[in-house]
Image (tube, rainbow, N blue to C red):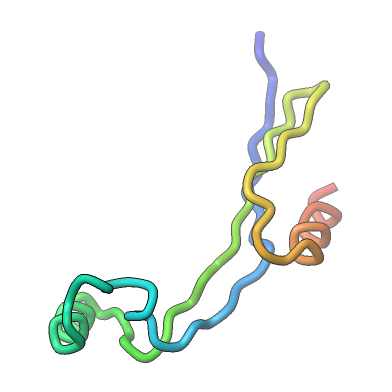
Length: 81
């Protein structure tokens, strides 16, 4: 029998201004604003969350996506130990 544990860790977050510079590059500013507003999405900033996944399979521990902040993931790993 395979015995493992999967844990998702919030390793940090950051706000980014001007989300259209990342999302919606294929539409004009008015369309981006209209679609965002219709879907209750702010157009002035977006929030990114860095979540990593840890799989503990007894003899092996596998970390997926360490994010952008090694201190954040290290702190999150220590907190779950």
